[in-house]
Length: 563
Image 1 (cartoon, rainbow, N blue to C red):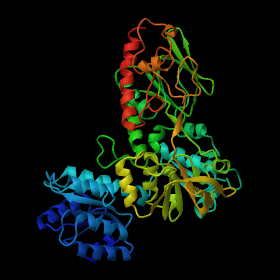
Image 2: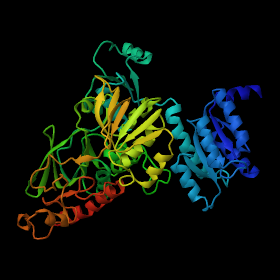
Image 3: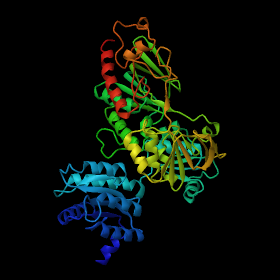
Image 4: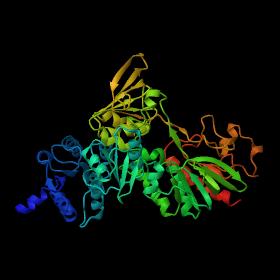
């Protein structure tokens, strides 16, 4: 039917390569049943024929959304085939088809996912309809559609691509999971939008909301309030006030609110903390494919919100004091939160290099985080990542999907001591990542936007200049505890002491007003607890922060039962 064929030419392709006739027929039938209205289903029996067909589709500018391949086709392994597919169609999602109950392939699948030969593995359909099969395929289609389908845009932003404030707005929207699109002021789309809203020639950035609200160079507070974010606490007494909405704070909020405690969470930015900036978390329990830190944290936020924990965003905690049995948190706008107990889940603040010209270009090519929102702007560019920990490794892997080359700069002679083994292997296997050991950044080039870097070899002392479109600095952080009163004891690095660690770090029992000893995770100020990365001796892992947060709620219950 010529008409049907012409209609299919406008549809993205779901491609199937399966050497088993019965398996291919079943999979093709299930794909057609569920997706044929919106996608063309194409299948081949061998990798050779499939590669030829895919090349033809690419030459015809056809969009290929997903490529599925059986694990052991003749002539070429499924992982090798999917690797070849990535070279031809780098934007297509790829998955291995495995047989139900086949446990012998775990090592192969782990290797395929680790070295990015595949995006997922999917169990062959074995019934009709097969909802498990559909769910796995739909997850891949959803990921693909994020960059290949027009999305509802809650906010449209026009600004200068390299301006620090434009970056801050993009990062705010991305980390908050708020659908938005950014147009450079020099683009035709940007100029057209500015004319349409009558804002040509004015200050930037300009934000246009879905309901026609126009914000000119808004603060984060103004932008947050315009999109419905709560930025003020209620005038009431809470059972628990949590400072920080990273993994520890969100975990505590879920457990506290679900167990009936009246809970409020104060967060100076958006939910997630540093964990929310991770492009891919591969070793978190329950997510074999991995999950982005932002997605994981947004799900935790929704879970806490569902249990009716209240949130106050865009406000810094500026003070903490005891008033009899109450604990009072003062915010940076002068408002106060009164509660019966407090949990400090404040995390850490990103550490800077301390180089004046580098620090001056923050947001204009220099980013003190993974800045996932900027990755797609790095297409074809030379990008540098400073750091040798997991955050740096995850950022490099994510940026390598877009940049021409990612350069990792590490002062040490090895990343193995500070980075998970799976990440070390991934980096070594990624062709467009170069690791520079025994190297440090000593200066930046560029007046208003980063143009290059000065690098120094720490072994020879030699320096060299290199062109650089962006520098991502991931060298750890310092605990965000400067605002705490002297009554909350900290170690020399600023991490909060609690429980048994108090006695080992200069705490005097005579300063403790209660008959019992401090509870685990309870600080030197009774009723004030700590969890997560700002906690003394914290292992700095998402899972440990989540565990801290949930455990803290148990001790909060114990404390509240005695006051």
